Image (cartoon, rainbow, N blue to C red; front, side, top):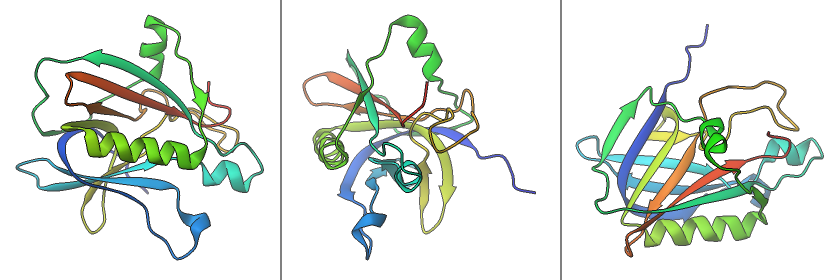
Length: 178
């Protein structure tokens, strides 16, 4: 029996940002962010900029993006905080969010540029370990056009702390996600 995925909040300093590499272009669907999160070392964030599941099922494969801007005085300290819950419904109770579909490579470029500009990155998602510690599922976990089941209260997101004292929280949804 598979164990329940561990959700986490990770804060780190961006070290390297790149487009995923693959032998076939149609397999590229992530931007990778390598963060330094002392004392844990490197952590790889894997953020989707398109949905292969929706594409392969004949649905809109674009990711819809909502951005919440804020100001900060101090950047959060690097941390890996397991069992940290994020739920888009909490944000949507405060104010309506405008999720706009993005061209995949425009979203990838935006993510790469924000990641390279950021002094710190904060992300929520599911922990995994392969060659290194990583975080994925950095998007809404509600049912979508291609996925029938809801996972409530376990959404993912990414926040960029920029040099001008502003921060941008990127909330990401797929086709059909409420």
